[in-house]
Image 1 (cartoon, rainbow, N blue to C red):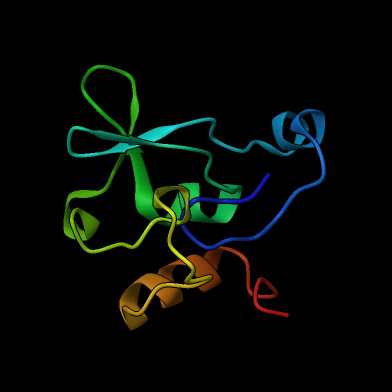
Image 2: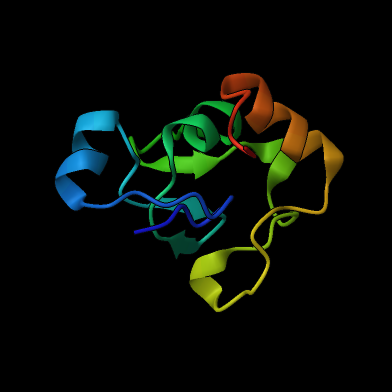
Length: 92
């Protein structure tokens, strides 16, 4: 399984649950698959309805791997920095 935002991988669903991965989230009305803890902390927030959603400042700006994208990282430097601040060793 891999994070829909940054592409980091985890071996199993059990590990993902234990490490706090988000099973799904929304960018506007579009549902996306899993997000790692660093992306969740940096880019997502709990919406009014209790569902995880992309923070307003990032809505419509990300490329998602669950949409068939080949990119393993985002183009926007502010997105990259927000995630790396939550997990500095992520790109290594």
